[in-house]
Image (cartoon, chains in turn red, brown):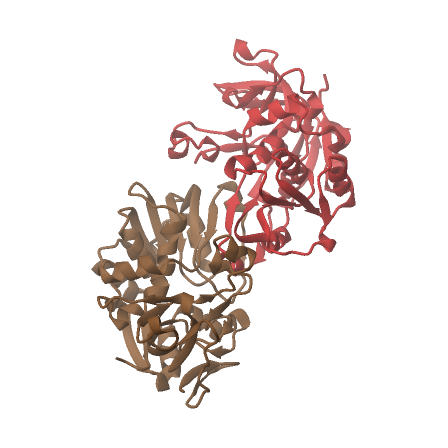
Length: 319
Length: 319
């Protein structure tokens, strides 16, 4: 099969061996996949990952139990043991022995085929297109913010970072009716906010006043945390969504002095994300800048690193 | 009056001008004061403080409204405006215009006399000795941990750092009946834990397993956070008590990946602390290593920096 493989650098491989599903797994033919900032961090050494890249995708089950045959699916990325203390206490996304599709210990979806655990699959309704379905995984991660930190209309909320994830988080938060602003650097992405009638401000024009109840940090760079600390009010909360390979320097004294809470936030609920896309509550079509065939996967990775492009997709086996 | 003053370095001054209480303030004659790690951080530039040092003390009101006359008091350290958004919304310790005794914008208690707002005072019961009363402020800060993060008997909890504050936090947590261990470097302070029947482990012997529900970081150094991140379980909580002048390097990726919450924690409730000392629930006498007259204040500061000494006091105007 065709695949984009990373070891010390990313390569397109035309004859990568097909994956063989283990017991409890399905084989899925990938239609379309999305490139995420985490993929770009992997190119810089994040998680020391090697193998087939990619974790955001939509596809059709081509091998597996009869009930899944030909189902069009989205797929959760954490592959879990079901037996460790985390799995047994209701936190399977934190399984001690987990592998993570295209991120840690398991091949990803930038390929014709991927083998995934049956328990990770979610059937997609027809109302969600393939292009939209690629956003299920990152949109679920965006919904995790309001799952961890309930938001109401009285709250003043900022999203720092107007990239791929930031724009999804901003749309989820806009749905709560809170007083919201997005802080970003990139005029292209701030334009997107305007189209969605979400208030936005360029980081150069920002006057931090420590007056936001909740700040969601989605920049993907260590500097984002410093901006967030300038925005959050005493006893307020910063939700930290960025993962990056770098170790930044950070003075935590303001966290103690202002008794700020920092809440790490990773993967989220697929059903909420699928439902929101089916009901057209979240706009993702406007976020797609370009799409590439898998043979042009290296160009696609470069395009995804260019801030002009919000979201870049790989068309692998289009319907 | 006599005072220990810090500008670029600490000095004993024999003829410092007496403070003059503003409206709403009392003048307090200081009996005994305690040296805290924050005082040692101030010597290294923390908060850019200059003035009379010190914020932990017990004294007698010598000037002020009649109802306070001759009262023996402990004193909260945040001096607040009562009118800003924080004061009006029930968070006066986060007053936007606050000064903090001996830490920021206001003279401290390493002196014969100190002027403090009447609203900051708490009358001490006879059951609390002067030596014990010096611990009211840091013990209140220790109670703030359980105020912010309720602890129950099923929880596995670690205190990282067995210094002055760590030993107070450990005693407060021991009172909850949780499964508790203290992680420290200093054999003298770990001995104290043994005397109090609190399980302790030297950091060299620690095997971090990411299995603690709650970790309280009290080391006062940036490295403490790295140890805490090795102890906390996925979706667990780290309470951060340390403030220090240094900016440490910190990779926040584990916070996101494990969805850890970090809760900054500063000053706490005086009534709980006074009550616990009156009921002899917290042992502080054993923590006092040495006490010095104020003329020997610089020696006292050096002694407080020596890890052999848990707590060092200044006897200023003993009863």
